[in-house]
Image 1 (cartoon, rainbow, N blue to C red):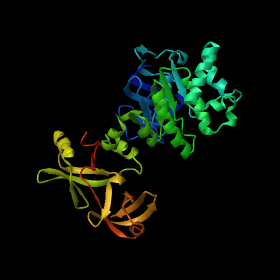
Image 2: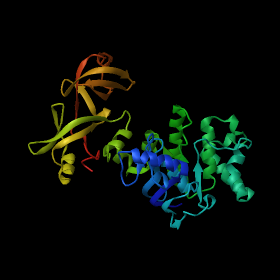
Image 3: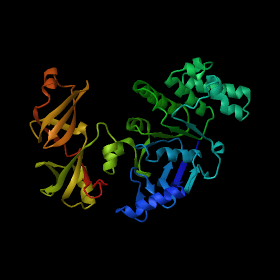
Image 4: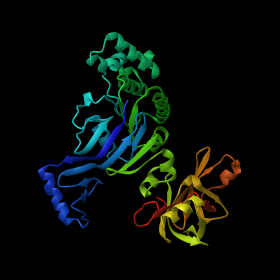
Length: 404
């Protein structure tokens, strides 16, 4: 088992001379020039004279046996980072260590790392047994040892009864178990997983998430997991690394990134439904910080008071963030009208119109009667409220949490 350290990692994909000419044309037309780095017109990738910058300034220390999840939207650089760790992509700049060993120039087969891909990558002409044991066979592992490790992996993943089947006779979830089993038979120092559940339906994804949690408890290895699904990130990871446009936005536990998002991007990305954002004011009432939203004033909680005072935050225009789960409805608060009513069983999702601003509220129905739930229908005037401990205040200029 081993720790993984990434220091100032950068990945640049070279571009052709023809592409350079096109980008020079765009360079001189662009009004947004910043240190010779330019935004691709239809993407968020950065372009330099060296090429397309996919990952930059990536610094991360992953402890031995830790489960770290890289999460972010498509194109943010998370899979590229994983492939650099695996050795499938070269590192343009920076240092990558597995344990105390610098592995920048070490071949993938010599890094003692196993990788599980999104598309399973099973050999269709081989049985499950042969798929599981193929890497061990290439290493000329003794037959008895190979058989023992294959059967141990099959037992852990509950696929023993499928050992003599071929992949085409298995369901998607069973194939994914085989793909994971093929990785764990090698007893790797580090296990890499690149969106392994994205091809499964919702029910199977939930089941496989639970299986991965159990698997993590049974095998002592370091996990690095890539996904665009924030639910997977929140349920699986010891820590989450949130990425955007090749940069790390925040590193923290699931609780930290949910309750203390560093900036607007993290706040909007983590949580479903997405956090509500409002134009508001941060003011002081009797010496205490408060938020003013459409003339409704809420004094912030003591912990937020302390954080803002420590940062010497002044009264200012802000972006106020409130999660849908933290909104209550009734006669008190910001006046609004119900636009859409979505009954989700244990909760009802209300889309409210507050002076032209769309607001989503998630209201638990556990303590409500059927008549009370039915009364929250489109067109009904209602007010929404929120607690001072559930407010997130972000700088209007930088988008950074003023408590950070």
